[in-house]
Length: 353
Image (cartoon, rainbow, N blue to C red; front, side, top):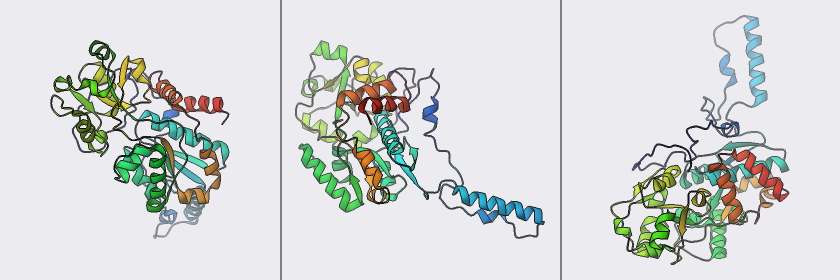
């Protein structure tokens, strides 16, 4: 990624922090600030307006003021309350997720009368899944292979339609969640090396790095190190051994660490826009280890029952985003430092959405 960053080596067992860092010299755009939801005393959703009426005696003027305050607070519904016609869109903590969540939000706003609240950059897969199941959010973007392996704990499968069908059926039965039609692109893991190394060593596929791996330092995000379709299975499938344990990095710093030669290989995403702009190379998964990771909207079934117009709004996105289009949107945000709101608006306009 462009811009100046401080590299943070993290080996904690927690979910990595937000991975959408603003460059040192760029102010956070106004469109991003709307995603921040400050903590408040009403976060639990409980509101007790009558608490302002103290038990001791008070004058009639004070009483009237308190009654007015009660009526006003009841009218606005209180802070943090899930009541009313509000749908909450969430996302994981990387650029593509923020872009897709913004796309969902704009679609719902354009095709319904409900208010949309954005809760983006929540964290990794497990945090977003728990938030969706518990009703703290109503929908977020997910990937079929991630749902299959990380949430359902199923063995790896390579047929996209089989994976989609399995995930859709199990999510509906176990979690009362609807897996809506795929958005049109597959965002698989990308094992990325520097372009100069790929040229010098003639690296094209993951198998090609086996002779060099013992002298290489690898850098991966925490989730890739822990998930069943991640590092351990991948390294075993390709018979790879690196020079020590891989460095666990904040996802937003993976490509910077690679560019600065602090690591020699990272696990990114195939739709990351900065791969090409930083003159890096994504190696082919020639042993077809990774399952399909088709991007899909996950929505609470209760939300679709209450707001059937959401199904139409989100369903209109089916098959609309190609790999190249997603990569360009990611690069517009990461590489050109554009506001995701503007990027999504342009995309929707180009698609007649």
